[in-house]
Length: 358
Image (cartoon, rainbow, N blue to C red):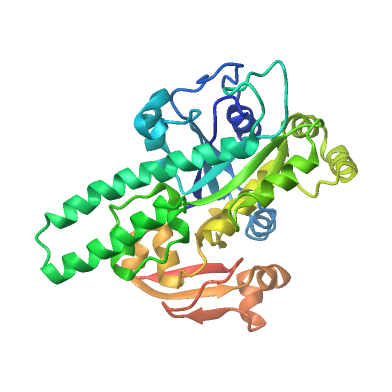
């Protein structure tokens, strides 16, 4: 389990270029609208140096990182929710993602056309968000009619209808579903897939000519809580061509603590509330991503549903204790190896061995 990140935005804002950078792919990133039609998909390993230490202790044959799926979705335009620019098809591609990375262009370039003829970052951002809202309003209106015709009791029906109408009013005022307080009844409606309920952050596509004041002004005018990651594709490409020692020096000179991929991964984990736990042995050392509120039994189900069904206990130790004590035997000898029940809240970096019986 990792997460699926969809890159969305207006045509020609640099989604495909950023996709190529993050995934080391070479898909077309040409200078015309709708260069991308079908979504491009790539899986990327989540870098984690802790895996190397665990694998070394256990002499593991295989090391498996957690992974992220990036999806480069074709450019949306105003009117997409009504089918403009193949909009309905493109919007449907967003449905299967966990996080929306909204790519916004913050530089002018005479060689890269803009669909509006000039650079309008805030307007571009608002246009795309409006299409997401309109798409959700269309979904909710249809769902509301289904509820009214359903075989639910009148009391249940009236309750859900009232809440759906409140949600429709909320979106009609240009608000996202993510800022609406969902009741247990609405939260349990799994078939109610709303685009604006998804986690979202902005990727600011910048270059050395980007005016910082434009980004500052942009931040002032977007909804509170929307976070931003700035990426200079050309600079990142230059960094990638250097050896590791020169990369560190170059990034320090540029004021960068880490590369674009690491920053995107951290942002996704933060917004989705994910943590990492490990399994490690002679055969395999592996990182697993889980929701922060997942207990031991729920985490075991990420590995295999049979383990969750037959869960007995979790034998666990923190990553730091595991490494300091040179593995399982040392951890047991020094009293840091613990046995936990199904309700144990797995911590970031736990090394776990699940006991189960089928």
